[in-house]
Amino acid sequence: MATLLGKHISLRALEPEDLNFLFSIENDESFWEISNTQLPFSKYILKNYIENAHQDIYEAKQYRFVICNTANTPVGMIDLFEFEPQHSRVGIGLLVLPNYQRKGYASEALELVIEYAFTRLNAHQLFANITQDNNKSIALFEKFNFKIAGTKKDWIFFNNGYKNELLYQLIKH
Image (cartoon, rainbow, N blue to C red):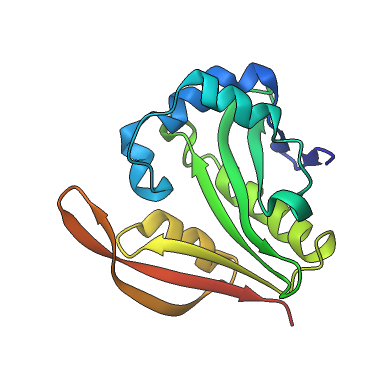
């Protein structure tokens, strides 16, 4: 899969040199709520993940892009997941590291992935699962015309409490 280029970012495949970057993100407990992670990952497991990240999205049903700024510094990741070619749909997950937020990287990454999914994957619809209290993500996805399709009550258990999760969809017309 080729690199996707924007004005201020690029989206590229995972590379072996991303191991420490991936290790720091996957083992940062502040991100575990959105990733449904409960235990830390070893570098060995993540190294194997990177080695298999070349799999085609049609085979793996998912794909992870690294978001890089103009200095080619990784600033986050945007994932396509639960890809269903038969039903022409795919989920989107997005994470930008706190130091790089509010610089437009998330917006540009989401715009590039929406275009990619609709034109290259021939998706009919995209979806995102966002906890009801994640106002930054809600505002971002609504900016790109994602609409609430439903609420999953008490869906996420984290820090001894339940949260509702909103299902957002963008349907190509």
